Image: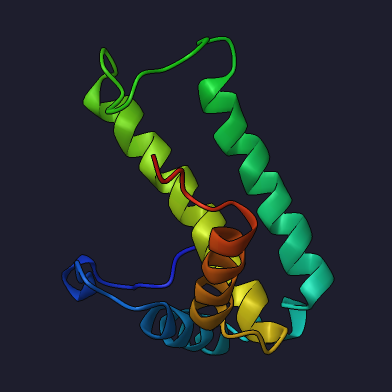
Length: 119
């Protein structure tokens, strides 16, 4: 699932709202919105999480920065991570959830629930 038709449209600091709009435009242009029910999007995302999991399967623990990984492996990982993110954003949008706002609120709740050690 992709939300950008041309690589030159990619931006480094794109917002979740921008991605959401691009995904909506992508789906509308292909008449896919009829398939984008919450259930279908969730199941598609779960499938992508499975593909993401396969990349790490049998590798054991992997260090930060993915030492000893080839560039092609990192690129594949980036693609699978992107698929999960794009389905998550589309799911949130279809459900009427402002994902950025929800994530920030969750961070605040987690900070209260799990306070930092103040030694």
